[in-house]
Amino acid sequence: MSPSPSDRPSATELLKHAFPPRMESELLDNILRTMQTSEDRSVYDKVLNAIFDEMLSMKDQQHHDGRLGSVSDISAIQYADLHTEARDYVVDITREVFRQHCANTSKNTVKLLTHGGDMLELCHELRLPFVSWVISSQKSSFKRYEISYVHRRPIGHSPPSRYLQGDFDIIGGASALTEAEVIKVTRDIVARFFNLDFCDIHLNHGDLLEAIWSWVGVKSEHRQKVAELLSMMGSLRPQSSERKSKWVVIRRQLLQELNLPEAVVNRLQTVGLRFCGAADQALARLRGALPTDKPTRKALDELSDLYSHLRVWRIERHVYINPLMPPTEGYHRDLFFQVYLVKDNNPGSLTEGTLLAVGGCYDYLLRQMWGLEHKSSPPGAVGASLALETIIQHSPVDVKPIRRWWSIAERMELVAELWEENIKAEFVPITDPSLTEQYEYANEHDIKCLVIITDTGVSQKGSVKVRHLELKKEKEVERENLVRFLLDAMAIQFKNPSIWN
Image (cartoon, rainbow, N blue to C red):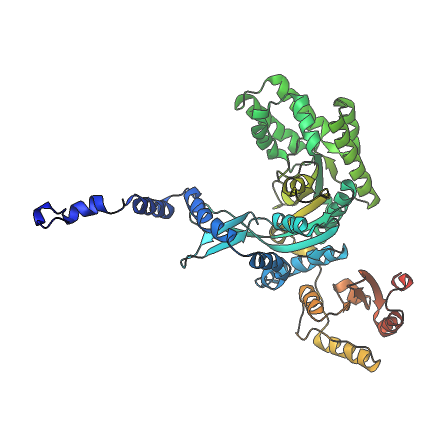
C-alpha cells in the first residue's frame, strides 16, 4: 500500500476491481425476479432441482430407507381429509374391492418451495414409487393397492390441482391373465356406482398400434398429431352414429391441417369404422387384414387370450378392440385398456364419454428401471388407475346403496354375546365407523377376523359378513347363527375350507 493517498485506489475503484465480480449476485437476482414474474415455471423447477437433488443425494441410506418405508404408513394421512360422505363411501367401496383380490397397501412429483425455504413434494402419480420399491425389494409376485391424492401442475402461479385416485397393481404372472383380473377389479368398482350398460372397456396393444400405423401409412413425425385428433372420438362407442359423425370432422382436419394423403386418411377411416368394434369381430377382421409378422401376431394372440379370460368372468358386453387408441402412459407398451362412462338418453346426461380408469401392462417400465446389479429378470407387471374424483362427481345419487352400519348398541350387544361364550372380541369405539376405519383398527390391534355389515341389502336379510383378514376368506352368516359359526370355526382355527363354503 503506497504511503501517498494519491497513489492509493479509491473506494469506487476497489469495488470495481479489487473484489470478486458481482456477476453471480446479479444472476441470482435475475433468476429470483424471473421466478416471481414469469408464467414459465421451467426456471423455478431448475432452481429447485439444483438445490434439492444434491441435498437428497447426501442423505444417509438410513434416512432414505425411512422415506421409502413411509409408503406403508400413509393411510392416516391420505384419508384424513375425506370429509364428505360421498367421498368416504367411494374410498370404502374401492378399498373393499381391492382387498377382496388380496392386495396390500403400500413420485414424478410436483415440487413447491415454502416461504421457509423447504421443499414440498406432491405426488404426480402413484406407480413409480411402487415400482422402485418392487425393484429394491426384488419382489417377483405381489399385489398392492393405494388410494391417495395426485397433483397436476397449475397454470401460472395457481395452486396445484389435486385429484383422488386409486391404483391396483399385480406383479408377476401371465400378462393376459393378470390384466384380466385388473380389469375385473376396475369393473367391479365401477359397477357399484354406475349402470354397466353405459360403461365401455376399450382394449389395445402397443404392437397392434404400431402395426396399424404402418398398415395405414402414417409417418412417424405425424403420429402424435394424428393420435391427438383421433382422441376426439376415443370415448365414443364403436359403430355408433356419434362416432361416425365425429369422423366427418376428423377427416377434414386430417386432410386440411395435417395435409395427409387422401389414401392414408381413407385407410384410417377403414380402421376406425371397420376394425374398431366388439372384440371377437374386430380380432377376426384384424387377423384377415394385417401382415402376419411376429409382433402383430403376438399382439392379436394376447388380446384374444385377454378377451377369453374376461369371458370366463362374464365380462364381454361393451368390450371393444380399439386399435387406434394410444396409451395414456408411455410405459404401456403391450396390452392396455381404458374404461369410459358413455352418455345415456336421459336429458342432462353426459354429452361425451368420461374416462373413469386406465391401465395396462408395464413390463417396459420395470425393464428400464431394473439395475444391472440384479441377476434375475424383471417380473411382469400390470396395473390400473381409477379416477375416483371423477367417479364422485358423476356417480348418480339414486344408484348408491344407502349405508347402514350397526348402531353402537347393536355392536355392544354382539361383543357381550361373544364374551359370554368366552370369545375374545372388541369393537371400534366410535359411533359410526367406516370400512376404512374398521380395517385400520383391525390392523393396529392385530385382529384377524371381522364381522361387518356393508349395506342395506345384507341387513335386510338378517345376515352379516365374517371376513378373515389373514386367510383372505369370507362368508355370509345368518345373524342368529353367528356365535355358533365362530365357535366352530375357532375350533379348527378357521383353516378347514369347508367352513367357508
